[in-house]
Image (cartoon, rainbow, N blue to C red; front, side, top):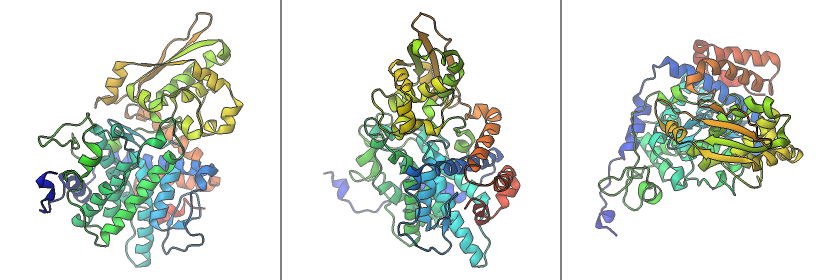
Length: 494
């Protein structure tokens, strides 16, 4: 062991932690585009959560750990009557938001779903707003929620730009935990030392493996893992605000730090520092970039690398729907990340396995003209053997340009192309979709459809008058921002 490991000179906090803390505590959000996008993101995220309440496999996880628990100023879970402590409420909100794989996405060297952080943000803000009113103080407003969302998106997304956690087997929910810890600690009133301590505990925690996202072990944990991470962020923020000391060298400590233990030697994507330790590469300062460029899942509840494949398949459906048994081959031309993450052959064990299979997500809209959450369920799959027949005829091809432009900052495409070949030698045209409808380049086209999605999701849980009231408030940027958080959440509970 190096003698340096034994030196007991306590270091200053790692610069990565200091940069996050200073951003959260001092940055002032002035971008109207970011605030407007955050408003749309709030609508979409809540709607995804409401839709998930239709699925018993999701709702079985919700509610207090101890039945009958009464929590003063308890945080509410939208679409339910639960009032929970903020830690469990964050878990539940994060669970319903992520369950159907329908909320926003960020794709870079690492990927993820930054709106997963709403679990912690909304739970903490609702609890604090109620508590403040009871104490005769000014409540938090939805503007604080939007700002926290922008900052959580930025922390998760900027770290993800050039740092691949999946290549060392770690799940992207690590970044949800870090981002939720930071913004929830700020909402709770943390000073700089407390915020740094909370962040250090987020990194020193055990980190989730990606095992549950990949064949042959894909399963429903991937639908609640982010809620678990956001909830943990709330808990760590609370621990730090109680005065718990931090771990200043959590990232860089030789042998025992995050870099050496979990990140370094096999992660060839990262720059090797002079001292031989691979560390995070951060290419830009924190601002509002991620929220402004976030990807919305508007048309399909599907893993984002397959969104454009689904869109292409819907386009081809009229040409193939009456000739499904005449198909000889289906060629899916795609990018490397899609191949690595969601290309699967063989039996698919459950709904979570199917919604991370590009072949399944292409076969369904080819055959049926659409893709909805219910079409991942066991009974639908069993009733339609044509899906697996089409999967067996699929060939996956990587297009180097798609792979390259997926990572280029001025493009960030998520391209897929589908072409169907028939046994008689004829074929369809190749349908190429490079940018999904939820991409920033298609905002004008996408936002009206996002609003329609939100209205449809509201209608799964509320009567018409309540749906109208919620939607009209969410459409009015100024009025929404000025609304106290607890008043806003009042509209969302049963």
